[in-house]
Image (cartoon, rainbow, N blue to C red):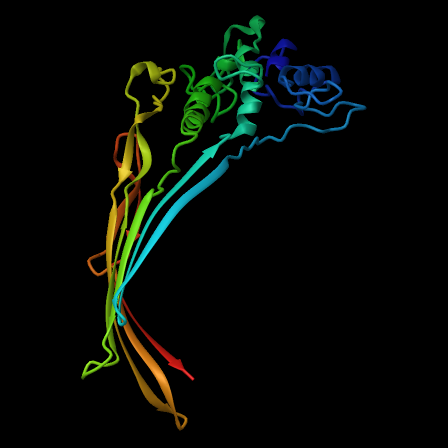
Length: 339
C-alpha cells in the first residue's frame, strides 16, 4: 500500500491495489522488498525476507511461520518399601516425586524477534516492526468502502489486513502493535518467565499403598483379597490475570484489553485420591482331560469415584475453560488359565 500511494494511486479508487489495473513495475517491487526486508540477511548480506524474487539471486527466504521449541528436562525419585507380615500377606508402599522443567523457551522465536537484545531493546524483527515508518504518508485515508487507512508507521498502521491491522469507518479495530501484544507477547511472557518451574498439569508428588492377602487353608483356601490406595498432589494449570492497569497491553476504546498472567497467583487442580479393591479365587479345573490351574478375579477401580466432569484449565478470571470426563468406578473380571 505504501508503494502504491507513493506512486499516486488513491486509496478511495475502487481499483486500488488491483494489480490487473495497476500492475507493479520492477522498481516498485524492489521498493516493496526494501520495505519488508528487515534485519535478516544471509552470508552474502542479501535480505532473506522479500516479497518478490530478485533477478540473479536465489529465491531463498524466511518461512512465513517462524516456530520455536523448548528444551525439556525431567527428574524423579521413587522409593518402594515392601513388608510381608506373613507368607500370604503382602504390603507395598511406593512414594515418588517427579519434576519436569523446560528451558530455552521458544528460543528460535525470541532470537528472531529480539536479535541480540531483549523485548525492550533489541535488533531483531520486533525492533524493525516498531521503527519502520512512512513519515510522508502520515494522513488517514478513506478507502472506497468507507473504512479508514493509516500507513504513517507500521507499528500503529491499520486498514489493510482484517485480522492484524483492521479498521472500520471510524478508525482502527486492530494494529500490528495490539495484535503482537495481545497474541504473541502475552504468551511469550508466560513461557519465558516460567522457565525452570514445573510443567503445567504436573502432579509433583505421588504415593500408593497396595496390600493383598491370600487364604492358604480352610474353607477359604484359594481366595485372595486386596486393595490399593493411590494419591497424587495438586497441580498448577494456569494463572490468574494480572489486574494491574500498568500491565494491560495498550488498552483503547476500540481494542480488547489483554492482561498478562499474574505468576504469583497460580490456579490449581486439587490433589486426587483413589481406592481400588479386588478379590480373586484360584482353583483347578478340568480342561481337555487335564487339571488346569485357573484364577478368576474381580477388580473395582476407583471405588469411591462417581464420575462427572472436572476442570483441567482455567480462564484468567478463575473460571473453568476446559473439562475432563472422570470415569466412574469401573468393574471388570479376568480369567487366567495356566496350562
